[in-house]
Amino acid sequence: MSGLRSVSAADPAFTPFELVAIGCSAGGLAPLSTLLSSLSRDFPIPVVVVQHLSATLPSQLPEVLNFRSALPCRWAEPGERPRRGTVLVAPPGTNLVLAENGSLARQPGPKPRLGWPSVDLFLESAARALGPRAIAIVLSGMMHDGAKGIAAVRRAGGATMVQHPRSAQFPEMPSAAVDLGRADLLMPPATIALALDILGEAGVR
Image 1 (cartoon, rainbow, N blue to C red):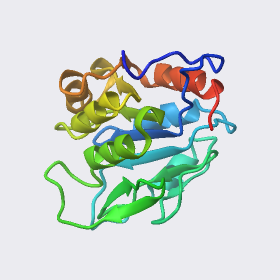
Image 2 (spheres, rainbow, N blue to C red; image 1 turned 60 degrees about the vertical axis):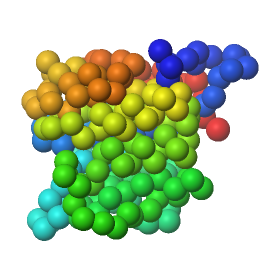
Image 3 (cartoon, one colour; image 1 turned 30 degrees about the vertical axis):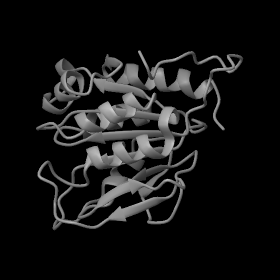
Image 4 (cartoon, rainbow, N blue to C red; image 1 turned 90 degrees about the vertical axis):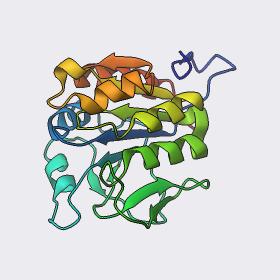
């Protein structure tokens, strides 16, 4: 499996991970809360969350996540770089991408057919910018946003994980990520968090 290479820092082929990108939609708050609540405050890899949100209704997603996460959560700002110890949340009404220099940018354009912020667009940009240093995760949601992104990260050598459809309120996104994206691991959210701890302990740049 391409993304789940050796996680031994003594291995000369080991490349530390630099980003965890989590995509979700309908039914995503519960597994996202479970995952984030299981990560410690000293989790060493930056985290970006891309959840479908209404472009017209106000959202307090970062505030809600702050009640559940040991890591502080806030809206992502254009031009900033994801950093360890913080969970950045893609804002509503636009698409978020990771530029080649590692900074975040908003991508203008019409609403994607599968909803916005687009999980596919962000994961594909992370694959281009980070290659094997990216971890992509898809949780509960409708339709198939994230499947193309998972495939891109996997082709680039990154690690890919998907919530097991049987544990998802809306299994379409996880199922598509497995069927179309060929994700490396299929697990419930709490087990995904354990896998992230293992990858995080291996070290980052």
